[in-house]
Image 1 (cartoon, rainbow, N blue to C red):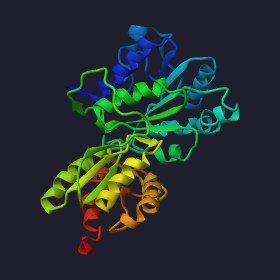
Image 2: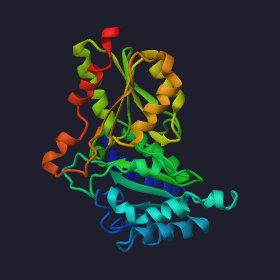
Image 3: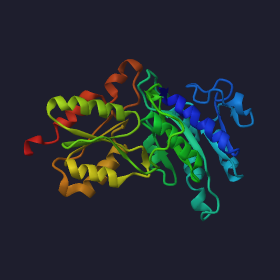
Image 4: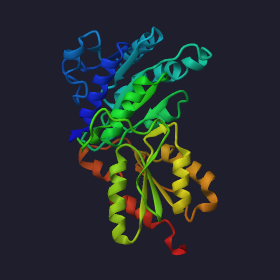
Length: 324
């Protein structure tokens, strides 16, 4: 059994071994091995030229990565916590996302931006944000978030190998999740969602930290007589409309589950697309179970903020079953 953190560490190690152009850098990723130990041992094995610490300056970290990528390197940078990445957003939106288009395809930026994100670890604001809405609304970026140990390894290797920039969102509370996985492993490519649990009555659409929540809710729903399907998006950009819509057309009902704020969050876009593409198959409006539209709460209150099994089941109960 290995943890998601170990799978990510192994993915970085294997990428460093496979390609000398790969560099890993960020705050405390060198000697310490990162706050969550994702880069543990990499400086010792590959030296300070391949894995190194940076000043506490996220904009400078990403700006440095842009220059390195333009000179042929494949930088993998770590933003220590989700909200710490905001000072680097100007670099991301103005340059990382646009350079290929700006140069008519002549200059690509193969940069992987690792961001530990979301809540569930008793952290405070700036340490528990779900900031994916900013990234998915920025054309020119891939946005990836694993929910399983195997996907953590495989998607990170794909991100580092990608010719284009990837925002790689790591669910912090899943770092210690375990699975029996033999590495290296290769799972589905970017843009391919996976049905984690088949069902017939409604579809739960989730990603990253809410996939285990959706699976737990689906098991509990069985006691109420509902057979729920769970779709793990895996990559928000590109979005796998085909798999999601095929599931909803089968079940006729859908609930989107994510930790990010509800207003203008990813669930709003997903619900709109599903409604547009599956309108004549829907038995009820597409519902969302999300974080509330407030700054992330103190640790003692986060259990009320985070989408839980009860809130998911409450949404399922509101899917107009009386018409079935």
